[in-house]
Every structure is written in C-alpha cells, then in structure tokens.
Amino acid sequence: MTEANLTIDVAMGVTINARNARGRAARIGPTLDVILANHDYPPVLEHLLAEALVLTALLGSLLKDPDGQLTIQAQTERGAIDLMVCDYKAGELRGYIRHDPDRLAEVGPHPTLFALFGRGYLAITFDQPATDERYQGIVPLEGDGLGEAAQSYFSQSEQIPSIVRLAVRKDEQGWVAGGIMFQHLPEGEEGRERLHTRLDHPEWPHVATLAGSVKPDELTDRDLPLDDLVWRLFHEEEEVRTLEPVALSKGCRCSPDYIASVIARFPVDEQAEMVGEDGMIRVDCEFCATSFPIALAAVVTET
Ligand SMILES: [Zn+2]
Image 1 (spheres, protein in one colour):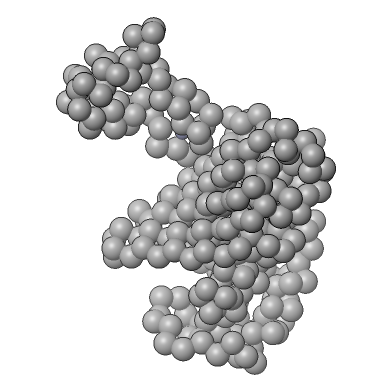
Image 2: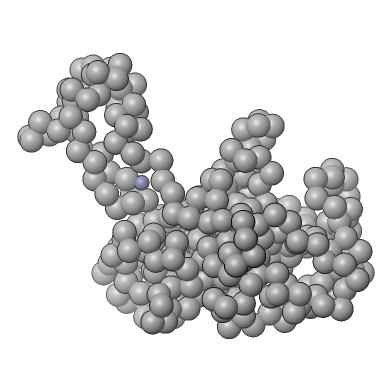
C-alpha cells in the first residue's frame, strides 16, 4: 500500500510501547457510500450504520488471523430497530439494519441509543479459525453512542481500559466515518499473553487523555492521513509505531454460486419446496439488500 492510501478506506494499527498502549485508527468513505447505497435507509439509520461500520473496521483490524471474522450484532427488545449486524473479514465490511419505519419516524433526528434499540445489547464476536479461537462479549447498548458501548465492552467484559471515539459526517463528496480506539496493554507489545491488568495503571490516563482530545473533524477529515492524525495526538511521545495498514472495501459472500452451494446442501424435496411461481428459488442477502433468483437446475448440477 502506498502512503497516499492512508486517508480513506483504510485501517491502521499503532503501538506506543513505552506507555503499554496499542491503538487502531480507521476511516471509510467510498466504501461507506457503496454499502449505504444498497440500502434505502432514512438518514438517522445511515448515520448509525456508518458509525457501526467504522467501529467494525477498528475492531476487525485487531484480528491477527487473516481468515478471522469480527461481527457486531445489536439485539433489541422493543426498539425501533430489531436487528443490526456488521462484520469484517480480511478488510471487507458489510452491514444492515432491520427496523420498523413507523416507530423510527417517531424518534426524531438525533435519537439516543435507547430510543433506537430499546433494551438493546451489543454482541461483539471475534472468530479466529487459524487458532480455533472464538469469543464473544455482550454489553448493554447504553450511553451516547456505539463508541461508548464498545468502550464499556472492553473496560467491563474484557477488563482492558479502552477509549473509543467515532465520528460521522456527510458532505457533497458523500459519507465519511472515522474512528480511533486505544487500549492499555500490560506488556504494550501486541501478541503477548495478558496475565494481569491493573486498571489503575499510571500510564493509561495519560494515553486516554491524549486519545480523547481528538476532534470529530479530524476523524472525518479526508485529507488527513491516519498516521498524521495519530502523530498529532501523540507527538510528545518518544516512539509511536504504526503497523501495516489494511485497505477496506465493501465485501459480501453472497454470490449466486455461493447461494447455489448452500441450497445444494438441502434435501432434494426441500429444494423443490423453495421454488417459486416463476420456477426460481429466491434467496435474499440482507447485507446487500439484493434478491438472487437461482434456477433449481443450477443447484442440481452442483450437487
Ligand atoms: Zn450480500
């Protein structure tokens, strides 16, 4: 990746070893426009999904396994939103929101998380097939935004002091969402076993204060490379290391071939029941808001 690509549709890791901290920065623009264009959501949901997707990029870029997947899923009770799912795999992002349009119309332009989700919970799942690791944490969807909910996920369920800042903006160029996340790690270096975390580590408030000073305009500035953004925050540190950046794009696993292969796993009589009046099996991908007509003949030849 060239340096020019550190501004948009990219995630980058950071370590500040002397402070026992690591971080992630991410910004998405064109990728976000592509994902949102598939859905025809009202602005309040576009804003929410944009925030969720940049959070997904931050968390996904923590995965060490190249085949790993990070999923965030909001489960709700009596909210205007029924379900929100976003995931990350190898730099590819996707997401959707299922909602009740009538209820959503009542919540106004700047709703709280409670107005959107009711009694909602955010499940964050890391899947790393290479090491057969799968872990999930669940936190209540409370506070000012998804960034705050993610912050409590790490601080409460994982006992890792963390700070998350997210910002979303739409202008004449389209949508842009940016975020940073910093965490205290007892050993600083990535990849070491965490044996014990002192929540009152003296280095942490310093890192949190500097990271927390980031402005929403900086997070969403398409002309500000992520390394410059991080440097602005931590320029007084002795050493700030950046990790290899990851290019981000919209991606889904819903090709007609893939769907045909899924249908092929069903018993033949059940396949026959799926066929509609037009002779096709219709399968929806909620991530892409697309319906795939699959001919049964195409499925049978695959089995
Ligand atoms: Zn899809």
